[in-house]
Length: 325
Image (cartoon, rainbow, N blue to C red):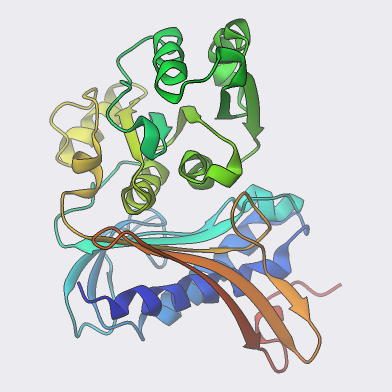
């Protein structure tokens, strides 16, 4: 992949973020997601790749665009796998909360896991804990190893987890260990990335979330020097068989970084829609302009760029799809 692609794909996440931001707080997650998806798909036509969507908005019969298997890009350029989430945190935008982002990861063809749309158990860490923990261990053992490796008392650890009923027993174990918990309402990708940003103050990300989001987070963590381990959680025979059809011979195996994002280069980009742990949200300012905050990273060079952009938006084109008052 060419390094120029990093700046090309951030324009795609910017377009999706700008399109979905006007829906913030309007209670319509589908409207927000549809606006982001349409803007992202249109901007992809300007990117010099021959891309195939391996993680997207669903199967061909479920999504009108950015569906799994769709070809994107100008079709002139390197062949790449594309993983997208035009609006990571649709409920977040609908409710006007924090940590919504537009997200893309690209890698050379054949490197990104074609993750089925189901839950994945996850353990995400920053650079200091890479290779030192295992998803196979009980959570109590994981916490003990983490505290020792970080030279912290158990009470000094901070763990992030999605606030979901399915995590009740895991939360009880975390409480019993005496550490601090930071709950996340939504935004699984941002949550898994958080341990790799010291300013976020998160040591571990645990629990289950979407498998496609797990691959996107793994791509980001590869660029950041962190690690994500995953294990699919098929609910019944139908989801198990879907894993097999998608080429995952053992759906219950521990998925490593190499399993999810390969051992080649990866480029990851995200633009904030609402303010979050490490990105600001879209902000409208005077003079028909909007401000965006993005991150774009490349695994090969470990370069991390934070981009603040001012966009001139005459006639507010992204407001045209909003419902009339």
